[in-house]
Amino acid sequence: MMTRRSFVGGLAAAVVLAGCAESRTKESTGQYIDDATITSKVKAALAADPNTSALDINVETYKGVVQLSGFADSEAEKRQASRVASGISGVKSVKNDVRVKMR
Image 1 (cartoon, rainbow, N blue to C red):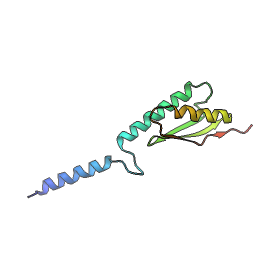
Image 2 (image 1 turned 180 degrees about the vertical axis):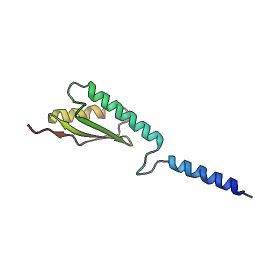
Image 3 (image 1 turned 90 degrees about the vertical axis):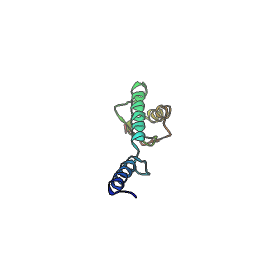
């Protein structure tokens, strides 16, 4: 026979574990850390690339999908930012929302 204390303890454990689980709209703790690592690597790679401006391009990652936004001086820079991001380990795809500055 299950005691009330055992039941409450089990229920609390289930709630905590469910809070750490991944869903369609929420990342697990591990996925969040993986995405933060990918974001950092993409930002560093953009900063190291002489053909992209890391200061003008924003990077966000969700479940391995990298989203680039911000501004580029040319279409070539926009394409290069996608190539750089795609080359990072763990990146599943790149959504490039970078806008080319008007001259």
